Length: 444
Ligand SMILES: *Cc1c(COP(=O)(O)O)cnc(C)c1O
Image 1 (spheres, rainbow, N blue to C red):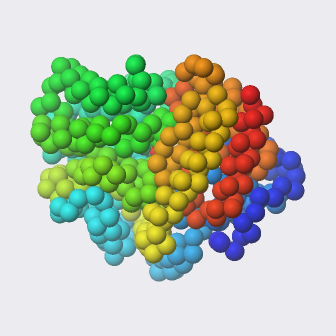
Image 2: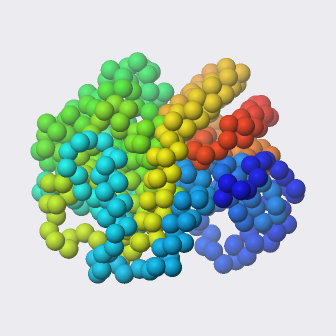
């Protein structure tokens, strides 16, 4: 709740004694396979802070991986969820339907790019949304090939692991992976041979030629791409790349699927990142920021595609839970009424100008990139493009010990990504950026 004091305040070392106690129980009880970005245990969270069980108030620049864009325990989310839990908790939408599900689908159909007739389904996770988008595209096109991109991340289920580029930690030892997945070179300006200029002029042609020669356009069911790659390191393709892929899809009867699980719901300063280049995806997968922290995901798209699957062909026990739907309606109302798209743009200006100043001072920063409240720096060995994961871990540790939570990303483990809640105050954000600046200074 926003009643939580919006301050950075440390009363113990990180982690404090109570956190340590619980983390000991965690390591006894919870599988060691689960990662942990910051070793503290949360007690409350809201606005731009996380308060741990020792009373430390930590500035949150991660938003639970771009999920609590409206803030933790946002007022409208809490009120809607309370009312829903008291009315009913579950019927299964496929057994007895309820209004909340229909209203979330109406909102998705209204808010996603394009004025054509759209329909939606709801699911539990981003990975499940991607799986369903691929199922729908295959069923509609009667084709099998799925095109994805290097550095892409689409989830941890079997199909989405196969679609995800990075082996460690997502895929190692978990094969075999699903067939008919083809990975194309990504338009990654910083690392394109010959540089950003050549990336802008060459990348689309390279991807299209490879699809034509290695798969054949008429065999491709779907092209799946994140408008800005998330886990891969906030890679922003040059202008024209996404519209070019969308056009190639249309020309070849391919379903163009935008994975907006991380970029969606005001994160980049638009409701959806596809809008920045007027790209209208045939299908769009959403999750993370949709419901203020409750598990919910959606697939939204052209009605003729969404309706092409046989009756009963899609679904799931919990998908579109009434509680998650109530939360989503609260989160979406918050985004619209508080104009969090404008907030995301404003946050983006504060962050990118601070990071730009750091880049001028610190040669380990190869690039500042991102859009809106989704900004990153890529760390290298000075004067080269060699990744610098050592500096990254030193910086993350420094920030944590100073009470600032930042997240990492990148195929090479060398990207710091900033994705704060969109309701964080300017002051708190600036304070966190000063800590980051000191962290980088201490790491070089
Ligand atoms: C997080 C993420 C997913 C997977 O979502 P889960 O809810 O973790 O299954 C898929 N695509 C992108 C772009 C993501 O950021």
